[in-house]
Image 1 (cartoon, one colour):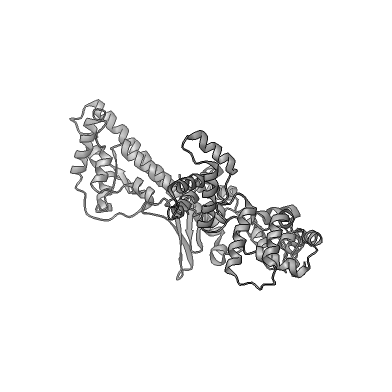
Image 2 (tube, one colour; image 1 turned 30 degrees about the vertical axis):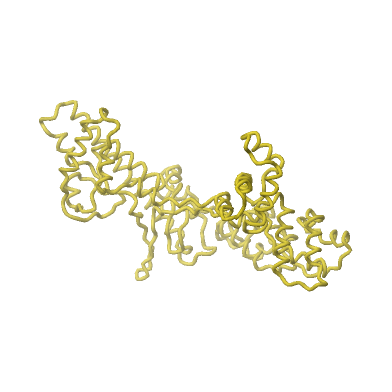
Amino acid sequence: MPLAALAERVEAELESNVALEQVEPSESQASEDAASGVDAVNQATAAGPAPAGADRFERAQEWHDRMGDDESGETWREAARRDGEFDPRAAALASLPTRGESLEEILLSQWALCDAAQPIMQAGRALLEFVGEDGFLVRPLEEIAATLAAASPDAPTLSLLTEALSRLQSHLEPTGVAARDLTESLLLQLTELEATLTAHPAETRFQDARILVNQYMPDLAQRKIAVIRAKTQWSSERLDLAREVLRHLDPCPGRALKIESSPVVRPDVIIDYDSEADVYTARLASGVLPNLRVSEEYLKLAQAKRSDPATKLLLNDGIRRARWFIDAIEQRGATLLRVVNVVIARQREWLDTGGFALEPLPMTEVAREMKMNVSTISRAVAGKWVETPRGSFELRKLFASGTETDSGSDISWLAVKAKVGEIIAAEDKTDPLSDQAIVEALKATGIPLARRTVVKYREQLGIPVARIRKISTTD
């Protein structure tokens, strides 16, 4: 399990099995070992004096006695949380990201500041429910009016919605939001841009830009510059001036407002570098999971002669489950550390230099080295993050597959993809490289790669084809 999921599982086990308990921060490791003989979770070294224990056992016993009779009362674990004990579920929830505001929420906040009559304000709020991620209405105004009318007899009329839409477009930021389509959004942005820039009276660039938006959007999208020039009979300079105006516009104004909630990454393993010894070491991350042990009081109660056989059976079952659970968590940590230590040994050069030094590391090789099943390695790696001196990464990304260079050395596919991006970044933008030219450039560095693979990596990097990357001053 990833760390957050494991924290939830620990909480569930603490709720269901009172023979399992968490070690208080004030309790010493020596006392803990003497009481249960079980090592702490995450191989952490607990610190502190001996436990009081009796009050916690009394709460557990009281909860156990009334279990099933009072479902409305607080559970033993709830009482523990109330008394300030470590709460792994709260720790896991605290690590979750705060949800970012939706686009509708942001626009509603802006609209609330508009000084308009109540019917207009109501119609505007209704329209904002139909604004998509790009900032445009997702349905025609007539359909929106019909939908609202079917839902409520008091819905705003089409004329009222039209008036409200005009107010929305003039009030909301950035300009272009709440447009009915891309063309309307760009025209709204052009109007504002022209008002903010000082233009010579003889200039036609804004008028020309409007013509391009209204009549030649498909040709612009396909960069058919020669076709546009033939249709408009404009000079190359005039067309360039109009296109330069369009470069100031945003085709997706709504995305500028969208606040994405970034997930908080909690690494399972931390890789540290000791500069004096020149070695990398791995340790389990601590702070989310509590230290666990078998309850000393329940151990004593299970061994007491006064306990009847049925009670002993119940207690021994809980103790067995608690020991198994603690052992399972310890095995999880030990396996994870073994895997990461193999990664450290194989990816030492990448840890030192980063960049393209990540070597191919199939999980099958790690499984053979650790004498374990590859499915076990896959489960140990899945969903885990590792913190390194080069940043935090999904552990799975360090198990890169790859290819062989002409010199016989191995190189990971991640490094090959990065090399493709590097070659494109260094190209002449007035004469960008074709996919075949990128193949030849890779071959010159000793990396043989098929053209279709270059295309795949270029698309994964979000890089368009050469004709779209081209920047020309003489179109």
